[in-house]
Length: 333
Image: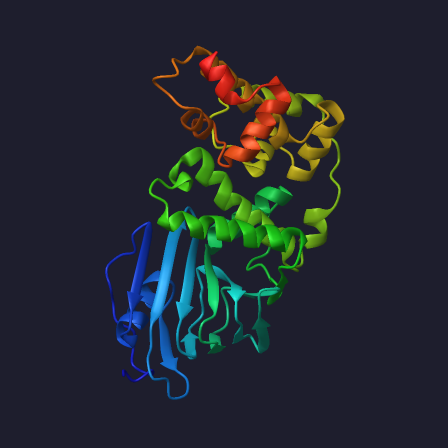
């Protein structure tokens, strides 16, 4: 077994998605360092065997790894510098320390690290399954500025513990699980820009909404209604190119207002949220394409995915509410 104080090995560049299994702690340290950050890994106690399992996907500024060890381990990292990090246990627990804060992460509470201060994973319990989420610092800080429509002081001082039991934290957990499941998919939906871009942006915005920090009250506070021309710009853009991977942030940028302000304006002038309006526009395009397509040359699934619908059950329900028939009936009529 390698000396845990020895420097990590160097391995080739990380692919956009990968799975790895190893019983060699040197290779485990090397893969951990390549996937995440320079680290020192050690086995706690007198474990009879060691195995590391990682299934990971990089999507935009976010990397999610589904990580497991079959021995109790510890890890030490230097400052993350260019990244923020969230560990989301799906089972088991993890005890870690950063900036003097010790946090016990469980399926009800994640632990969050900022880009400053060394990180120690004091005890990763054997058998624990943890989603390790690595987030580009530039992207998260830019997302906050887009949401607030003004510059912010960086780094963002995120609280070290994050509640996963409900609200924004539960949604963040679900988004991380969705991305982790894409690793094994033969044709990952997240690879499609219209799906992948909103997915990783949503992970950033839900982290900012779920975590405690200096800007959270402002971020979640009510916005001032904007004038109709801003709404008109957004509506026209949606109709002109609904296949564009719009996010709430990019629509607010287009309108020149904050997300909260745009949402308030849409409620006032359109009577629905911006993303709900976009979903309706995309449903119209799906309907038109299904009605015009030979059923022997396309499928409902292909058309739905092309217009950004990832969950076929929810898509079919929304289509049925709007048109009164299932999408397959439109295709075969």
